[in-house]
Length: 424
Image (cartoon, rainbow, N blue to C red; front, top):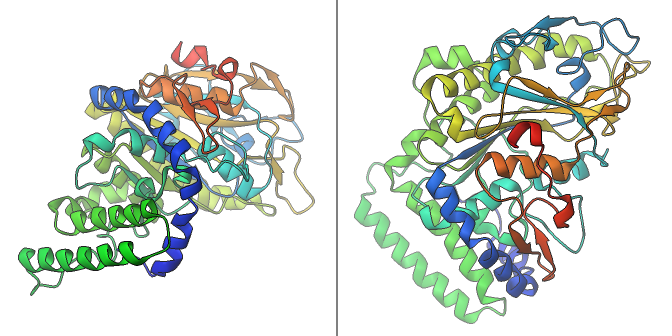
């Protein structure tokens, strides 16, 4: 539950927040009004994170008959004229609820930089540590917090809270379907004993805070993190992390990604505002077609298709935005090892739910998938669209940790442009 991180290392990390405390507060105050919108509309975000860089030309933007097209064939979907990979038959049935953006163009071809860009909407900047979108939503939900964490990451991959601070970091679940590690109390430890232990801990913490040379806000943030963990330990909400319906597990896939998607559905139904589920292994520089057909795509198909189907059937899809994305795409041209390399210039993401108008494709690439042909979409357009789909104002003005005014979805107001075909 509390991990093995050295306490003073944590405090040293948090001390770095002191220089940004005033501008950080400006950020927090400036988006206060958005929390009311999030509460009123009760929308949640599920991010399906494809770590390593998925080959979207082999999933969502296939090029049959072209030298770049690869070995797999396209199949029809529930929407006439839209085709996707033959290895995604379950997802294909849900195309009416989804939208494919085939014209995303980004600038980062390195894994760490691409992960930062796609998780935060900003390229890495040594001066400004932007929070991930899940952490922003967690902050916006702070007045509505329960014992259930607002932002949960199943399988890792999230960028983290940036200058918002550790209170809004994701709650990490390493083994979806099982209770979080170290969260179960011994049978002989009653609730009263837990409260006594917490009281003792708080006294020790107060003494440490009084004596430390580090920033008091850092110590306060440390207390908040531990307090939230303790609340979950003594709450019945911890039982939500267990998955007991074997038929659902079989349908989604008896693996971490399948169980993570099932858990995401369950947690958002219970009030979590952001859940990220990770499926790694997409960095396929060699043997890509066998790896896709035998491992990655069957795993993705069962879980993603079942998730969207269940959200739609339950009526929750209108209140849940689902975003499928990764670090970047992969080269249309197949390399000498039968793989594809890093390629951010032209690739695809998929969105569904919330205010998204499904059953369509936005943009296109050229015959070989190498260049965006029409309707180019940049990261600011994608982020503005996600916030709008959640019912939030992407033009809400914020301040970064240097005190500079910016916007929720981009640095300049002129760049806050949601994709009109999807949320216009």
